[in-house]
Figure 1 (cartoon, rainbow, N blue to C red):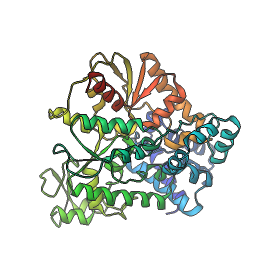
Figure 2 (cartoon, rainbow, N blue to C red; figure 1 turned 45 degrees about the horizontal axis):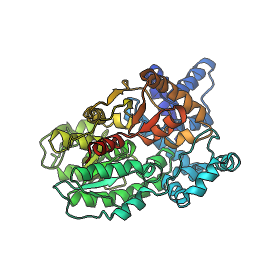
Figure 3 (cartoon, rainbow, N blue to C red; figure 1 turned 90 degrees about the vertical axis):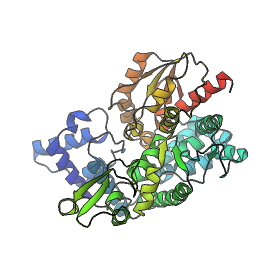
Figure 4 (cartoon, rainbow, N blue to C red; figure 1 turned 180 degrees about the vertical axis):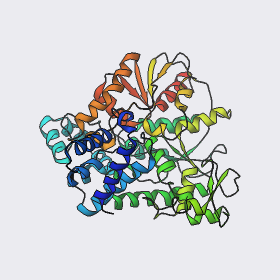
Length: 458
């Protein structure tokens, strides 16, 4: 199936359902345009053009808020097919590799910051990369997280207690906001848990969203090989970036449970598919399985998605042993293993749980943790369909900047109604947008927890 037919099938399916016409009208780039094109086709009788179909796929940022995983997966496959056929634009190649940008610009932070602050030179550089001239760029720190960790000499070894943490910091944390991963390490150390920081590449989400299949599979394959070995050694993988966590926990394992390799490992009956009821605790010895007749489902439930070329057992192993940082700390607290000697933080804050955290279905662990801090008032943003509008690198693009700001305006008004002193979110993409659109001090929850421990005197 060619990419035009693939995205056309998405248009027809969504038009037939029609739920997202109202559900996603103010929280999505894609669906308002999809329904506009479909309605115009119905009114005029003129088919949606191939160019319009191609442009449609570039409006999906894979926020995962829409209700149908198969639809967004098909959109990504269509986008990838367009790139495979037509090639990746130079402007995308320049900005999709966040790690490369961080390394190059971070090697000379003072010079880079000066150039980006220059209206003339900064504007020229943004123009070459296809970045809107009004989009603010974060300042590059004097020292990135990887360099800081090398000075700490934190290597694999025997931890102070039975917990073994392999920390996946994410590109934005490593190169743009190193204070977040630093705080993560310090919070774990305060709790007597040593952190191993393995060699790591970008999680692959930015390149996946741009349809760059070759580069995405290269990044994912490199990370999975290393992380799977760590899991075998007894390490838990912890992510402070919800997008990295969503990638490892949700996206990579899609379809893996339907693979022959997994079915053989769990001893499935020849007439039944054996599917875990709770993927987080599923293993060959688990009893929490659903049994589905192969005669009914074998043709539908297959491991043939984007990452089906990668060992399904390895994808499952990493997914089942990856934790969001807030989730992991909350679990420690519930087990009585997290120190609660928090000092007072007399601040009123608004907390925004980002899209990729919500899609992990782990609740709002940071809200529970922040509520443990004396004198801190934290009011969460309720509602599943508020979005900051940044959408990773999409919000930097010249053609999406205005839409990005418009999309985020509903959330910003909601935040302003709270009148916070601090704005708290665990997504660094959201942090970039909040720094662009609000006057508030923006913090990751782990920074506040670290500050509270420090205030107590620990």
